[in-house]
Length: 281
Image (tube, rainbow, N blue to C red; front, side, top):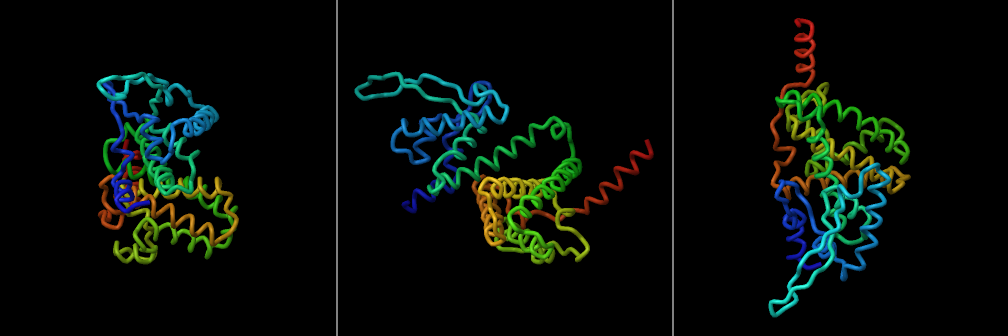
């Protein structure tokens, strides 16, 4: 792949071809997406769409809500136009499509992480419970609880992959941090945040940083299970690569790198305040 093509991908080519309907809903067109994913002809892309539709149905979603068949007019030269079929795709549909595309292509591998992260972000922000939250402290509490839940699921997936002993799990977690934090491990993050050994890194993260780590955890768990990873070395590599790709996605959408986000008061203080308020009322 040529360098300028790689550079184009790195500035979120998937966002560049995103459309917005008159109602404000975002969508992608299958023909444009097939070109980005390097399919030589649209007919070769159609089986991938069908697999994605099946995965959509299997997940309990309504296919038509995410895949809408449309007819579009295209120029064929000399001012003439002809009608062609296309498919309007939701972000979730794009996520399912890249999951079913050829993973050996670099652009597909990038797309898998990009849409996984953005879809997960969308899921969180659309949760009615999350939408009711007004302050960053409330969002922190919500995301920290989500992180606890998904860390347990990640630990279970890692155990199935051969990461059994506590020491090995600490190494596994460090690989994830190094991927997401540009090479910084847990000790480096502690030092950078000026935390004591007894203080947990996750307890001193704001909502943005917690969300990034939540994406890292959920996507690593999913990949460990999907790829049926069965060795510690492979599990560590997977965690590091997912962390790295989440970091790249943050960069592509113009976000702040997690190590540059501010340190905040321990979330345990927020829990204490919340309990005191509850007792007072």
